[in-house]
Image 1 (cartoon, protein in one colour):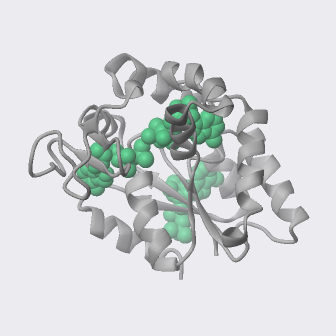
Image 2 (image 1 turned 135 degrees about the vertical axis):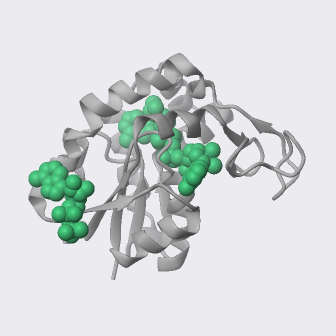
Length: 213
Ligand code: ADP
Ligand code: ADP
Ligand code: ADP
């Protein structure tokens, strides 16, 4: 199955992607995670992406698309995948459709995680990420048992540079202007499914899985 997750920053895409992908036995492909790994690894791609990410702007399409094209060409993505954070504007969505058509396939479902802006700000402001394993926590909604330490691997938890209040506000504007047009784009294609993304994580996963049968 070929699935895309869309939703504002902080909607819970990364959190849900991990469960949905493992339920479906497909790889989770998160462009944000790939960019962050390249930034911390100091690669050329990371150097290119960093200034855009720090501002909360989108990384240029040609850079992002080339990276996704490479990833979708890998062996584990041939039978299906879950895209988290891509596409993020209509031109990326059009290129993705073309890419998949070249492979003789197409998207099955686009899941839209629906949450309001206030909840998004609460979620992003309290998000903490493990420097070692990448696992995501929340200071109130999903706290680590020892402050600043990842329960899963013992790594150090940090706050993403782009999760500061003014950058959060800018990312929400970028979402409204550039990403939200994807909702009607995919609704017109007849593959959009809205998922109420409020409430306990497991219930949201159940709702999402119900749209994938
Ligand atoms: P969020 O938690 O806001 O959904 P992500 O981890 O998906 O954030 O993305 C973090 C940053 O990485 C974005 O603000 C953007 O700079 C960059 N990025 C991720 N995916 C894309 C994409 N498809 N196109 C352009 N930039 C992207
Ligand atoms: P995205 O990838 O869409 O930016 P994340 O999955 O990183 O979102 O989640 C953002 C923050 O919200 C994290 O701190 C996460 O722990 C928290 N979170 C995720 N799902 C829920 C939920 N259902 N209720 C409360 N907090 C949540
Ligand atoms: P279903 O009946 O299969 O659950 P819905 O009619 O509830 O599907 O639509 C799923 C999601 O798509 C909802 O979030 C809805 O707001 C959104 N949606 C449906 N049609 C459009 C459209 N033409 N433009 C934008 N969003 C749409």
